[in-house]
Structure formats: structure tokens, C-alpha cells
Image (tube, rainbow, N blue to C red; front, side, top):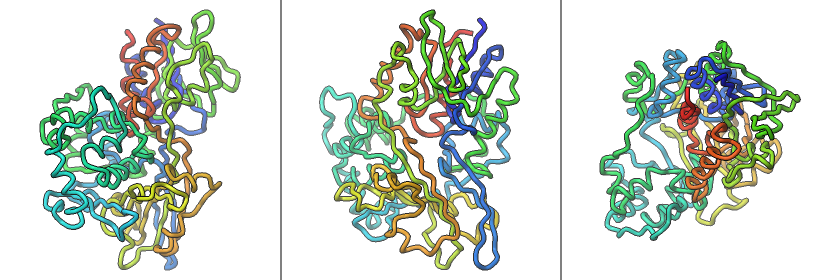
Length: 482
């Protein structure tokens, strides 16, 4: 079979897909189409030079997308090994303050509250009242999942098992940190499947389930070399020049493959199954491609907008997406430090709910503490990143906003460097029923006009983490016969 695969979208999912498909099918032509001039999607790393008022300078890496990775994603470890990125990895050990100390900034309380990082810390104030009673009472609660339900929101789940205070304080903060979303709307089974599985495994108790062995067996078809050895004792890691090194290395590798074609600055105008059964990918330049197979790594609503009415698919617009404003701040080093040692903090949903009066901060990362090895002369500067946005929409509707809310900045000195990036619709928010809808989408792709020739992958289908996206790309086309 003279196979020609077109991959739509040059983010990390599309790049991973092109990488693995070009290896799995060396005789096939792989064409990756990206609408912009760069690959990597929301991943964006930039090294900037800064100066303080005393003649000191530094070169500092700024991230506006993902900034750290956890070593449990074997699909990413495999890319590090196969792309020769081992010597560019920088790690944060589990013994460091950046790994052990994470905080909450609860709107109605003063200061930062340290999240539990050990058994003894659970018994320290304020965790003794905020956290411990809810966790201790949970195993004694009767199984209370309503009969017949197959999904619910994160907030409903947390409220059922741990109570409304715990759900708001810890559950909403967790959702802010990963999805920049409202925990009262997000599917628990799609967003946090391990919680649902723990409740099942623990006969109705999440805490009991967490203490029991997890029977899940991971796949073993990863070529990781000795990378897992260097990840022993590591909490999170990145690269010397930021996460952007990963898509950069993938794009460089793909450009050197004889069976891969990379098309930048080529927006797609339509995708359909023609009357004669051929697949048609039309580019805005007018070029028409007739591949044998298509992989879509596009956001699902974007794909929906490209499909001809005769080739439509279900559920592509069922999940909304969060928009985020990322504010990078660099300050001269001060004494005392601007923040405690640690990774950063998250902000739960306010007691009064979301409103324009809330400053819109979802969390802040203390970058200098977690990844100082990326920067030259790092000891002379403090680097922080503030995340703002949905479910607080006000800042997102301010064109070219380049400032942090006044209530936040008034407690900080004047930064010597600021950079603001606005990412519209960057994180898909799976609503309850998402897993069922994705199974129905998979069924629709397998039959009828598409007949298994189109695969839809990426963050909008299963998992929004970088590891999930790389894994999704690795599994693309596995069902195709050689």
C-alpha cells in the first residue's frame, strides 16, 4: 500500500505523531501541516537578557506554556532518549524545597498556607483544621455515589466524599492549576480518572482506595535507554533552554527524515471525504492533498470548523476551553526574598464565587526556586510567573493587557522585566460525559465515509498534560495494518 499520512497541527501532539509514524511506516510519506511559522503549539520558551540598576546582568529563560515535566510520563522519556536530549535535562530533586513546599493562597485568609508534604505536617496548623478532619472522616462515610451515574463534576465528587469546604479549598485550586477552569463544571472521570478509580477500589472510599495497590499495568513498549536512572529521586524536570527544546528537537529531527514533509504557514481550509471516497485536505494556498490517512491533532472545535457538512463528526464542540494570561516577572534579588522557598501557590475559588472584583489570579510559580539552573547569574534575580484568566473573564477581555492586578502588584517591588502572553482557548475542559462522547466519536470515525482513515487525537480527546499529548501522538495509527 502506498500510504500517505497528513497530520493536521504542529503542536507537541502532531510532532509526536509525525515522529512515531515516520518510524513505524518508513515507506510512507508523512506530511505535517501547521498554520503558523513555528512548531510547538502552546509550548513557548524564550531566553531574555535583563539588567538591574547596579550593573548586573543575566540571561533568563521565560516560559509562557508548560514549564516542568514529571518523570512518570514514559512517552516523554522515550523522546529524550531517542532525540539525544539527555545532556540538556535539568532536574529538581524530591528533597528540594521546590518539590516539598507548595502553597495555597486562600482569598479569605492572610498569607500563604503550606500544603501537607508529610504525615506530621497534616497535624500542624492550619492543616489540622482545614485538611485533616475531612480526610479522617471520609473512610467512615458510607458509599454515596448515586445509583446509575457514570460521571459527575469534580466539585460534586469532592463534596460527596470530603464536604463542600474541602471541595472548594483544595478541589477548585487543583483544577485552577491544571485546567484554569471551574471545578463545578469539569468532569471528574475525564480530568482526574484516578479519583474515580480510587473510590471504586476502596468500596466507596477515596482514602481507602488510595491506600490499596493500583492494579493498572502500564504498557512497556518504550525505548527509554538509561533515562529512568537519571530520573530517580526527581520531582520535576525541564531543559536548559526550557520546554521548547523538546518540540524544537522533534522538528529538527523530522526535517532530516526523507519520508517527512513539514509545511509551515499553511492554514487548512477544509477536510472532507469526496464523492469518489478519497480524502481531501485543502490548504488556504489552494493546494489540494489526497492522503490515504489523516491524523488531526487540532483542537476539536477547530476541526469541526474545517469539516464539510457531508463529513461531519459528533461531539467536536461539546467541550469549552479555558483561556489564560501568563505574566512573567523578573525582579532584582532582595532581602528578605520576595517569596518563601517552594514551587509556588494556587488560589482556590473565592467564597463569594467568581466576579469581576476578584483579581483573576489562578496561581503563581516561583520559577527561580524550581529551575534556577536554566539561568545565568540567577542568584541576583527573582523570576516568577503569574497565571490569570478563566473562570475570571475580566482580564481576558482587556486588549493587550500587560499588567498584573493592582492588589497583587502593590505588595511587590517594581519588576525590571515583564512579559505578558495571552492564550485563548488553550486548555480543553472536558464536561461530564466526556469519555462516553469520545467513545461515540471513535465509533463514528471507524465506520461510514471515514472508515478508520481519520484519527482524532490530542488534549481535547484524552488528557491535557504534555505527557498525555506525546502519548497520544505515539499511539496514532497503531490500528493500521503494515
